[in-house]
Image 1 (spheres, one colour):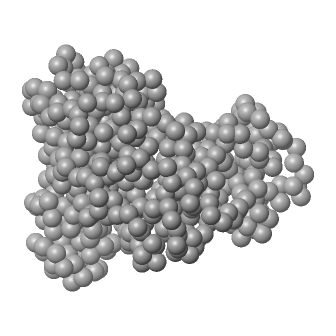
Image 2: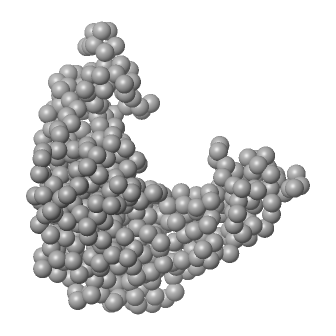
Length: 238
Length: 238
């Protein structure tokens, strides 16, 4: 049973500004919390009703859950985690493969892109400051636990990519055929927003223009699909 | 200026049942209508306000548009098209590449999958009867015009895939590495729903199990991403 002070404190997490002041995020939903626990991700608190069969720090009644939850139809679990925003270590982009998202504002897309980066074993994901926030519920949920597995850094991409020796790959309509690309050990794949593409500052840092060959009539592929096809080609044994 | 009878008739298209009885669908939004017109798709009617610069059959005022539109914030265009549901020609699946969607209920995913099939120049898309409806606003919009470019058939997949000589590719965790697959001229790629995967009736028809190699920790890729990576590998020159 939660005290009314605890309940009040937890309910205040509905307010994004308040979460940010406390440096906390909230994850709800059995699948999402289970995915994160499997990584394993260490939550600060996990509130579960009787229906929740996973790890928990505190039992709550369905009535309490209804008051905690940010959703009209609450799940059986409400987990609170600590927001971490590790700075990008100097020189990190020279080693391994990175995925850099430039102004990807749709949270579902950001989550899906984290999942793709994780599937292909990339070393890190960079988010420009105008991407959807990593710790928003939709990004966390769409990432299916990948938010806890792959290092994510927020950085000014124009500055982070300046003077890089490793290639910076940008997807364009008139680039080198991705099917002919050699396997890459080090490099940064930059992906722009669906609507506007790459920002000028990031486009100026692209050193390797690549193209996904098209065989039909569609004008474009969506950002997540393009990223996955590029990753698949880079990881393909030669 | 629309007569009140016309306006009433058009407003009745908000009702899905009514649209189906009339065999009509509605597409709104400048980008979506422009994409379809570029195919070109022949709409029955295109109602545009002064702000709409594309093809139109009838001019409407912003006030009339507000009454027509299915959205609280209408765009400058409201297009009405005829629903067509061509039957799958006998033997069609033996020739060329087909994408078969088995119970993909998310309309955004169905639209994205149509766009992918179109990009990779597949010959047709099959939808199981429990997929999101092709002519729903979200499917049409997410397809970005591809709904009008690639033949789409609704069919009982278990029956349609029975006794096929062309290979039926299903994505599984323990299949043949897609990177080692030969280029395919004929075949059907089956994609299941995100939550439940392939239905038993369709899984039983898979004759070629394939796997997208994983290099990291994510448990899965989403349906559209998996389909695109498979298509890219099948289309890759050997």
